Image (cartoon, rainbow, N blue to C red; front, side, top):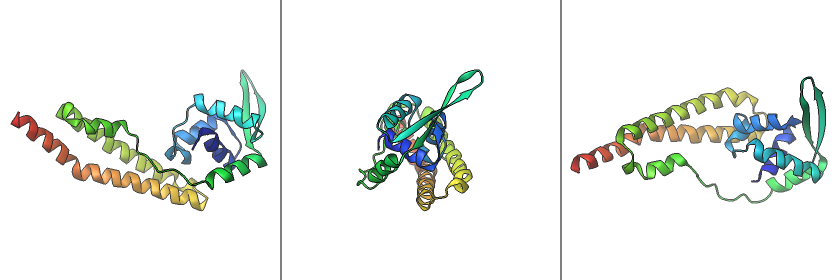
Length: 178
């Protein structure tokens, strides 16, 4: 899914500034799809307006640059409809964390233990945040995706809590044998 389509998804919910769209990708319901920063959001919004898929209205602000608020057009809604009706590709897990774990034998055991503890804490924080966000989901699909995302984090947390000792133990045994 490209950033333009993701922006159309956000705009289908309400008119937004680029900053508000960024917040949806950071901590809103769109955080679970892809990361998108201002460097990709603003060019996507420009392309959407150039292509007639969104409009932009500038609002004056005191002592600040004008605030640009974007709105999806009928053509934008049609483009979003077409995009979500295409067969999605397979999900791929891209994780620096998993890459590090793949080479765990190169990481000191105490550092690896700390890394695992940090990831456990991160999943707990994410689960707590998702619980707080649950009431903001109003579309049936959003509710389903929210619950799916919650299940993924809960499963990851459970796996780490129940199996991290296996990795750490194997590494300690290897160190003792050397």
